[in-house]
Length: 143
Image 1 (cartoon, helix red, strand yellow):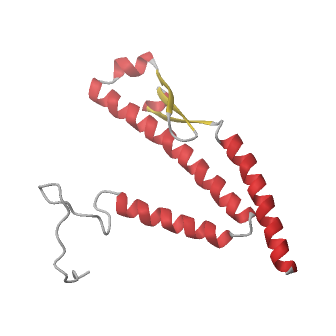
Image 2 (cartoon, helix red, strand yellow):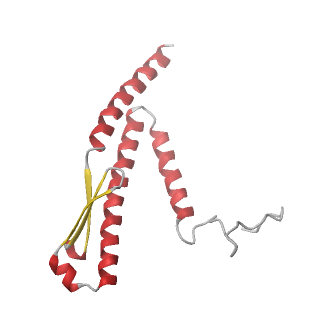
Image 3 (spheres, rainbow, N blue to C red):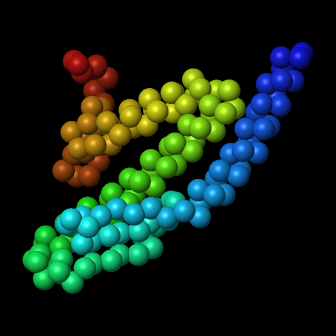
C-alpha cells in the first residue's frame, strides 16, 4: 500500500511539473534558417508560422524557385526544432513520473510512424490509380 501511495505522489508531482513545463513551452518560439541565415522562419510551439524574414540579398541572389525552396527549408527546420522541444518535454515528464520505459516506448512509436510515413517507408499503404486502397486477396504477401 505504501508503494502505491508513493507512486501516486510521484505521478501527482510529475503532473504538476508537466503543467508548468507545458505552459512555459507553449509560449516559446522556434527558428529555422536557410540560405546562410538570409532566410529565417519563426514558428510557435505547435508549428504555426509566426514570422518569415528574408534578407534583401537573399531575394536578389535566388531565383523564385530557389527562394521558395529556401523558405520551405527554413520553415521545416523551425518546425523540426519545435517538434524536438516537444519530444524532449514529453520524455522529461515521463521520466519525472518514474516511467522512463514509457519515454522509450514513445520514441520507438515515433520512429516507427516516421518510417511508415516517409516516402518509400516500410508498410506504406499502396493506393491504386482510382484513389482506393487495393483489395485484400486474403493471402499473405511475402516479406
